Image 1 (cartoon, helix red, strand yellow):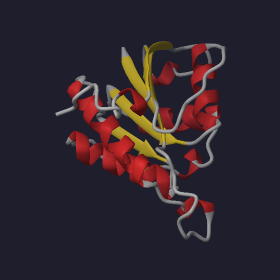
Image 2 (cartoon, rainbow, N blue to C red):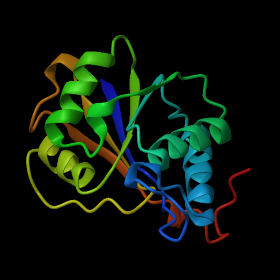
Image 3 (cartoon, one colour):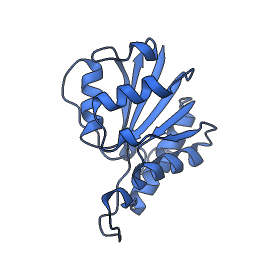
Amino acid sequence: MKELILLRHAKSDWAAPFTDDADRPLNPRGREAAEVMGRVLTLAGRAPDLVLSSPAKRARDTADLAAAAGGWAAPIVVDPHLSPGSPAAVIAAVRARAGSAGRLLVVGHEPAWSQAVAVLLGGGRVRMATGAAACLGVEAWETLAPGACTLLWMLSPRLFTDGRFPLS
């Protein structure tokens, strides 16, 4: 079974200077959350083989910080179709780029990420908080389609940033 991890970019900084929404950076809490999620995935034995990211700065930075904190060897590929994204864009990007990866992490935006999880599971309501990750199981990348996945787990960085769960 293949694992598709959809990671919503971490908390962005609306007060930072930026001229285009695509250039909006992460705030300090978002940077911490991205690093925490990278460490959590590694400690859980769920580091990705490949990372796809939206080209928006906040998504790219989330991917880069998570990868560095988790010590991932996975390449990070920027896919312009993931911003703002849609369930169809996620499916197309995964099918086009996953190759032989067993575990693929895709970083992007709301509302597309909640919608993508719901569509891939075959319905329901999902709310992806900033920095949250949802892991979906699918038999093969070429079978990725609406309703083809099983929810394996979903985590929010808030579970790990209150000091009760040491990550080192």
